[in-house]
Image (cartoon, rainbow, N blue to C red):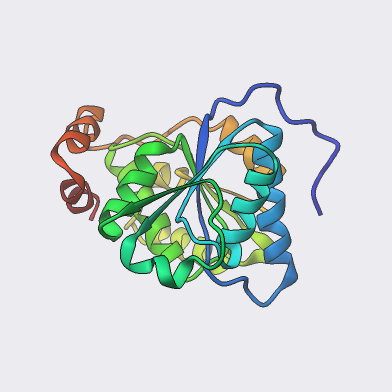
Length: 221
């Protein structure tokens, strides 16, 4: 349940947040409720949304909540996925792109922070790529996990195991911010300060924006 005792700040440090989430609603109603609560939290903080552009599943719920609250919604979606992930009327601005690399790069470029709701392979792939970009120093934007009902406990345990085994630096573990509610997660993201040392300069991020999308995806691998 959301903690309503802590009021949101009058002005957020973020103008737009990118949300990764499933195109399915999930089996638990708590996943769907969390998507709606996250959307309302963004509205309260006067934050716009960028997301994968779908109107189904958790994508549809979070985008509708933000749109209904009067904030701008930008959906970035490959043209080939539009028949599959968009049903009925679209919400907000839809920006078609040619492929998955362009989708991820455009969402990353537009956002000041990233949040992952529960999702499947696509959500994990998008999440891990922006974490890898942060580790490399391509960006220093906060990355949050909305760990609804412990959905991401196994992923967090795996990452902790990778730290213990020497594959992820302890400072890079700090890249991932997690919480069980939208309010708590947004408070943590607002306070986030990077601790890791990247291997790429911020200049590389700007250069990749000019050179195109493929280079960024290659560097992040």
